[in-house]
Image (cartoon, rainbow, N blue to C red):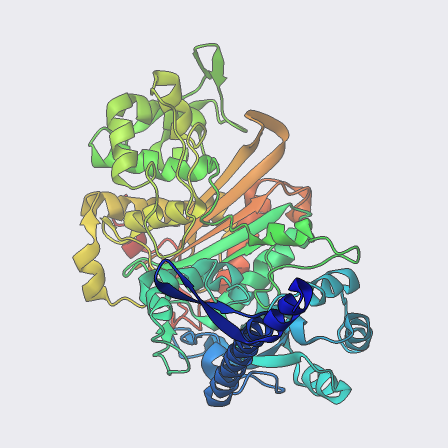
Length: 586
């Protein structure tokens, strides 16, 4: 046998044995090796296929046991926005409530043809953003909002399109039946029903936001939140200030009605305002209407102004309370005061000594400055601080402005502040301080929530003497009958008060031809129950062509009281405005 034939035979055998060094060694042939390798490959394939089938089977079981995906027309309630409590006025009239709505969403991974979806939705939804929607549909994300808070008709029309990969989720939408009537008091919410402004934000700050975060609101009915405002009075106040802004060609206007015995605010309006149902507006080019959003600014509490001669009320009250003057006192107003390069003079001054009622009636800057000088700088600052006019007002509304005053008071500061220049306060806190002059001397924090007289007493504090309050009631009544308050007088309701005409501060300087006007009034003067304060910003004209407070802010007071006094339960009395009970202290 040749060596070649032996090698062929060996390769054809499965295996054979040889002896080496007394040991037997088995040598595997080529064919056997190939069969062994083939068996290993088959085993690997079986393991691989089994693993794939196990994974696929597990995923199928998972999908079978999971909740149905929200690919139907309306999603489940787990995504419903949390409920908010209704807001009602003091008489139970509805101011804000929740409506059930639906919002449109897409699952981009399930969208087959984004272009077709965009084209179909554009036939139903107004102001449809093709580019943004197309971007969302091509994002390969699991979820995208397409349009929030649809109308029922829009939902029905979209359902009829039969588009796969989109659906609806139930949501809540806040609705304000009165529109802009009380927008600066109630405020508004965002698209997720979270309070952003006004009492809506206050409600969240009192714990509603925490309840929502804990998932404890949902659709559960919540107790309504009652406010102190009277919707009837609120509607009239807003109507008056809106008409005044138009009639007097002013930049803005506002007013507040305050109960002097409880601190309750029955109405407050500031115009321009806005509709909380539509807190923002979109321009045709897709931008935000910034002019419309200026209506968010509440000038009654979110802004400070130099309140002009209304501050003479506090200066004379200071002089009376400290005993420096009485109603029979006389001050020299015969010549201007020159101080620190400034000249203090009267508008249409009498150029003679004036009694205290005449100082108030003729709104004498010279006479008021003389009273402030009698008290002194420290006493003046302390008195205004005690009245709450130099510190931030505490109330439920967010965003209340902080008053401004000189860092260091000098004599010239005290003199100008005596007649309302050099200190800027909010109109609301001016009304609150005036209420203390009328109610017997008690400073009561204002509130937008109902409050009884007993509750008011527990939070009030005396800031002036009862006799001082009595004297101030006399002065208010005197000015309402004989002075600048005559334009605010309403027959039968005995209105008293004080005008304030101030040069408006623009970029840190006084504008000589632009006024900020105010009038603070009380009624009925035999026993004041309400303070009404009006403001008119930069009027170009007024009654009989005048631009002062007597021609603009005072007629606003007359309109408000004339229309609201009967609603507030004030019975008219057609006696003499200067009867003994009103002049007992003079």
